[in-house]
Amino acid sequence: MQKPSGKDTNAAVAVLEHLSGPSMGTDTLLYSDQLDVRLEPDRLLTVEPSPAAPQENEANGRLIARLARAGGTFRMEAVNGPVWVNGRLVEVAELHDADIIEFGEKGPLSRFRLIDVSAHPRRYFSDICDDCWDYVRTSRRPAPRRVANAVGRGVARVASETTVLFRTGIVFALILLGYITYQQYSINQMQQAALTASRGQIENYAQTLARIRQEALTPSDLAQLKETFARDLSESAGRLEVLERRSVSTETVIRNSASSVVFLQGAYGYRDPSSGHIMRLVVGPDGKQLVGPTGAPLLRLGGNGPPAERNYTGTGFAISDGSVLVTNRHVAVPWKSDDSTSGALPNGLEPFLIKLIAYAPDSRDTRLVELLKVSGDTDLALLRLASGEQPLVPLRIAKGPAAQGGTVIVMGYPTGLRSMLARAGPSFVEELQRSKATGFWDVAKRLAEMNMIKPLASLGIVAQVTANFLVYDAATTHGGSGGPVLNSQGEVVAVNAAILKDYDGSNLGVPAKWLHKLIAEAGIQLNAQLNTQ
Image (cartoon, rainbow, N blue to C red):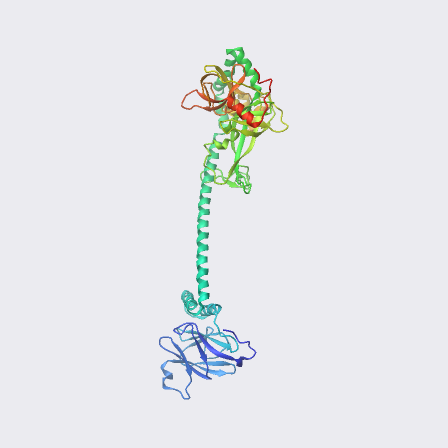
């Protein structure tokens, strides 16, 4: 309904819009100058012209109010029962457009309206909403009941009083809203599941890093190393001397090849390829690393601490012009074979090499290394010294296979830093303890500064030669991966790759023919003078 303009109220007709009770949703036209408003026992409200003379039944409680026209509106008088206008108990009141009238203690509620007769009398959805709001705002019933009644009546009126097209639109909108809500709920559930899995995977990775750090050098490790130094030193340092005493050729091969065998030290981490954020440790305001309930370090993508790096060591050796290094594939791209972190990272993260450096024997220089080529056939990879790094002395690569029963020399850095510390002597260990420079990178740098980075050599016999592997009994262990397996002429006949756990003292090497294949695929030219027999 349209409200009157207010300029000419005589052009308006008066109507009671019933907001509750049995007459809810209907209108009563106030067409007479004098009207009696009666309230039936069932709360039905009736409006009739006032009789010329008072009736006997006016005192029986049915007559509750009387309306009399006054100018362009009506004046209402409460006759037999309480009447409220806009929530205010009245005896006499002049009504204005949109006043809410409540008849009796239990209602019903009606709204007094002045309708512009020149306007279209159509009722709109907004009118129904206004009616419901007026009911909630004016009714004296408890708030929960008011709201429940308003909602129920509003729905009933929308279903009965609006057009079919409007109702169809409402149903369609509700269906669409329900579908969108369901889809959003499903997406939220999937995201929550992925987030939960991601948190669990990050926690697993953090625990892996915690275990790895527990395996790293600590002051107690150095103390224990110092206590057992005499035994370990005699066993480790004496190995090279025993080999040198066996034959002049063995001594020559070891002496000539040692400078070409490098100690590789690397670290890798994980990042989000879309944002570039790196998995980092979380540190507190004091700069100290924070840990979770399980004791593992807290990790976050783009955290405020250093990258959560996985440290490792390996062995490599120089070929070609001395700037190309050979090692194992699992040393060049360690995350592909790292069982400790396999499956422990959230989906979508990618591994990347944070740092890879090489130390040559008797050299204080730290050489940066880059990945050149990875074999798709076997456990081999080629590295290249970064631009500007000083090349090394290259080794010769044998053209033919090793002979079964022949002697081989395996060179490398088994057990990584620990074996070199054992050979460095008690004074060096004590110095590390005093300086507290026991970090992964710090120890290697100090060893290089003291010219204590030297490969170990072990002598063995070739037990078996196959197309894919060379089996020999030369002693080695983790950290020696990627080292050269040399014949008595100092030629590389294989690349040390793995330990046969089920056969004590037996190890595997990748035959030189696979190395020749990888070198050809990389387009590398070997030194012709070195590789001619």
